[in-house]
Image (cartoon, rainbow, N blue to C red; front, side, top):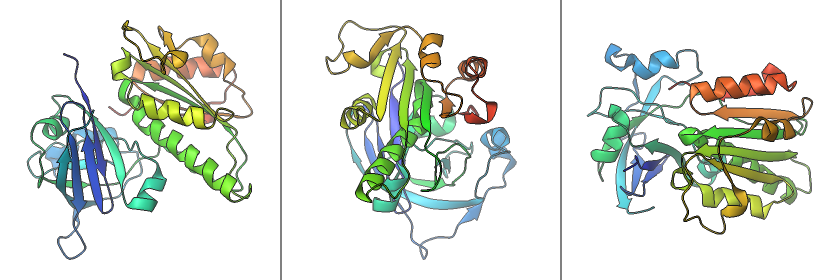
Length: 291
C-alpha cells in the first residue's frame, strides 16, 4: 500500500490534522499564561536545522496541544517525544490564519521520526512545539506590478504551492471587493505531477478554484501511473506522463512570469534549467528543496 498523506493544521490558536487513513486532529496553542516559549539549541535536533540554516526563521518555539480528532479522507519543529526536528510546509492561505487563527501543514507518512510520530502516536492531548520560518512565499503589496504565476509541483511539493494558490484566490476576492484598489494578479497556472490520481493532494479544491475563476486560474495534473477509475470531474485537467517542455514553454513570458517550484531536487534542477533556457530570468524562479 502506498504511504498515505496526512494534513496537519497548526495555528496561532488551534490546528488540525487531516489524513485519509488516520484522521483529523485539532490542537490548541497554549495561551501566554500556560507556558513559555523556548529556544532550540540541542545538537540532537540539527538534522532539519542544518539543511535550512540559511532560511529566515524565528528562534522561539510555541507549545500547542491536540484537542480533537476526526476521520477524514509553519512548521512543526519538535514534540516532547521526538528529538528529531521536522519541517513541514504551510499549505493553507495566510488569510485563514488572519480569519480563524489556523495554519495548515501537510505531513506524509514516513519513517522519519517527526512524520512517523504524527501518523502513529499523535492523539488528542498530544503536545507539540511550533516554530515559524522559511523564505518561499508570495506576498505582493497592492501597488506591486501584476505577474503571471507558474506553480510547478512534484508529489508532496504541492503543499506550499497550494498555499500560494489559495492566497492568490484570496487576493483576487479582495481586489474585486475593493473595486480594483488592491493587488491584481495576472493569472496563475499550476502544473502538478504525481504517481497517480490518489496521490494528487487537494485536487478537488484546486479544480474548484479554477472553475470559480476560469479567466485567472488554470491547472494541469500529470500522473505517471494512471488508473482506469478516474473521477469525471478530474478528467479535463488530467494528462498521462510527466510535465513537458512544451507545456512549460507555453506558460513562460520572461517579462511577466514568476515561477515557484517545489518537489524532488532533481525535478527542480531540471525544470529550472528548462525555464532559464526559455529566457526566464533566474531571479524569477523560486524553489524549495530542503528535504
